[in-house]
Length: 355
Image (tube, rainbow, N blue to C red; front, side, top):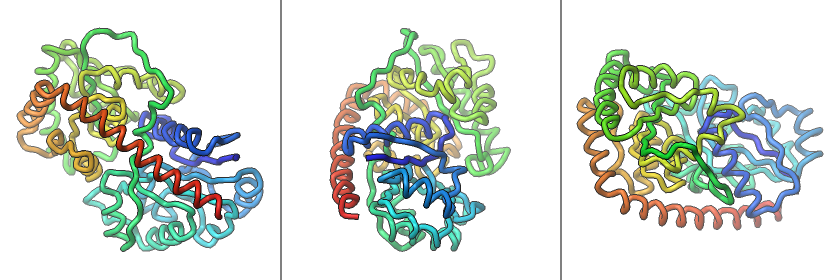
């Protein structure tokens, strides 16, 4: 089988790793001869491309994962660049796998063009599913349809892979998000308050751990420095050394950290998938949604919390006293999620073979 995989090829930790997770699943359940890839955020599925590339060269089109149900300014209200009338011109089976509803709570949600386009996509796809972060509920609220929920493919990056790091001292990772700050913090005053509160946490942690800030995208670097500058034993890793063609090199840090404090979905998912405890700092519904789905809501804190330092340090204490319990819970959760993904792929195999 020859497969075309289209997803957000931005080569940051989240986008890159979920692509690896999808490919791991494709190799395990479909035994492909070829997995080609193209960037969902740029590839236009016009008639020529559909007829001469998609239909002629491949047996299956895979879209996702990632938070691709987002972008009211995009032509179709989400990231797939295909005219609605052209969806029916795809003659090979296609699936939309483990995607996320990524609109922030203060955004208006999917515009009418997006609702129509997604409805046609769901109708035409051999399989359409969303990731396990509350996206199913948000899609149902917006579209009035129930779609299957599966584990985010980022939970499966560890299949048949080994991750190593040179660092042997005890360390924690902090991953903060600073793109779209108007949605994450809502105001400059709120962002300043966040910085002041969070620095208190970094100072406490740096007294007993090395603290590594791990920016996922370029915009995260500035905030990482604001939170770490002048604090001994805290550092920001060099972004370009762990991005683009080197993204995979940072995964070992997430696996070997004592715990991770994360403000992004894949800042949560990657370490959780590797058995590393996470404290989620929620600035988007998907963050708390994921933790609730996994039964880990005790380790979730709102970024807008007035006494953020007090709340975060309480969660740190909780993790330190329950570390073995948390890791054991993650082992069981990851085994359960693999079973759910396997069931999804058995269903997909039947659907694409009959298409």
